[in-house]
Length: 162
Image 1 (cartoon, helix red, strand yellow):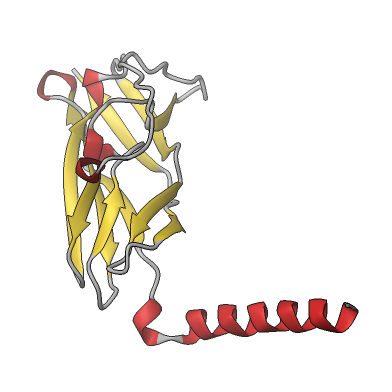
Image 2 (tube, rainbow, N blue to C red):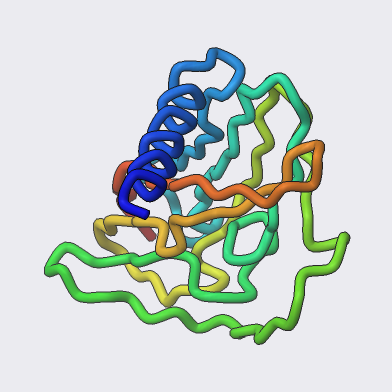
């Protein structure tokens, strides 16, 4: 029994290393950018992108991503003193994902969206650090297999001015 267990573990490790070494299996990634300073009267605009370097199309589950808009608290925003800025948008409860909940991102492309943070967070003049809250995102490959990737863009900072 121990030999079978070790064989399974070794087989799993070999498969993991094959995936990481394959040039066709580059990880899907994300990024956030923001220009600074920005005027509160024009909105505080954040850019979010998903990069698909794979040789196949993917379908990103849009839940808890900026691509679905403010249907949940997407960002951890802190002011200069480190105080958390509360989310003031709606919170949606979900059942199982429907086909319309997935966003097609073709192979070797980047899909972007711009969000106005002032629509869901009470921002005043000052400096803010912004982090993505939900970092484990899901997508289907062309075979319909659900995969995950960690979307952990670096903290970005914006100066909001009147």
